[in-house]
Length: 317
Image 1 (cartoon, rainbow, N blue to C red):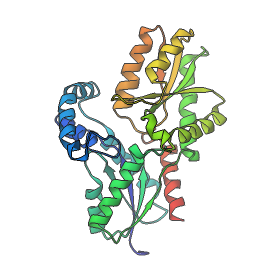
Image 2 (image 1 turned 90 degrees about the vertical axis):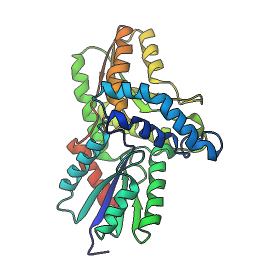
Image 3 (image 1 turned 30 degrees about the horizontal axis):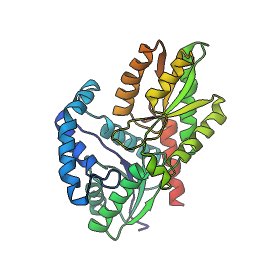
């Protein structure tokens, strides 16, 4: 193992590479019984197929508005390249990406690493805050892939990193830059995170606690108090509240005129930032007589990439 490169696998959700890919992507998503149970187990895939076909036209229309595809694979591969350059003097690393609901899959990535002689993989989910719906599902998928195609590979996992110092500094810097757009006018900072069913939290999922840890560290640097809300809910179960739309309405009711919104649980641009925040929520705010500006996703921000490097080096030690 000492003479072989260390594999680093960046794990992400994935997204359709074209409008034609949308039904298949949605089918993969709704087939994941770890995050959504569609009746008895034997009905999961038939129901997933039905739901994905029913929802595809609406989803395709949304992806059409952001360019006809998800940029998530491209951005994740750019992050992998940037991380490789940052780690160039720290050792021998081979960095790949694996998408949970699209390509390349964890199995594909592990096979590639196995065939390159890699005997150790560090799994780094690009989700700062752990929940079984994101990091948990991706890591389970990776474990199954390793046990199937490369059981000899040693797998080290980084489950979450809500207070990684470079990540926190990068977010604080985004806020400080966003404040300038209001030119001394009063504003409300709003953190928008991906929502979860309340039942996940009741069962011990640490997601909300980890979000609050991140916010606490950010606000130590910025001195600006923000409000947390949740976006991207679907289905009839009870979801975390308040929703982002409800938060916008509440702020309008109190006379707020300016909102600075940070996508707190998203480190890369995809449909939640490019459509929901930058189009849908911005339009909702305008309708209510408010101005909404968003902080850009971290993507390949050098501070953020340095944070990923630190996580890898800590895991090596």
